[in-house]
Length: 181
Image (cartoon, rainbow, N blue to C red):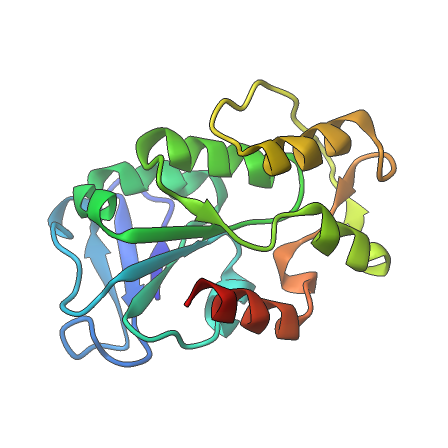
């Protein structure tokens, strides 16, 4: 796993359960010094929340980055991400989609998982209120993502609906990851 910290040094926390990152299971690295992917890595998962980052299922040939919300912009220093499979999973709310859009501005090949209408509808009882929703043009979203984002903004699911990623059923995370293989 790889997590971004919110400090001026733009450090990243690298954790790989299979100890692919130079033999370490977790370490902190300055983003400007993390110039190459660890050997054998083919996929990088960017996860918005720390709880989900810590519980993320082990995936072969991958690392997980704790993006820390809008701190994902620090990833732009990792040019090697342009040549690797990049998958983002954030909260299903207006800010989650905004963060995805910002990540795609630098890395247009970024895929999203578990950020769709079906997941939102399946978790009605798990939704919470988004305190300060945002509404802005997001030019990098796919048509399905735009549909969900616009529906959140328009209140189709209710006022200020938010589904935090840690509230998504773990089985669905495993299923989504299996579909990516």
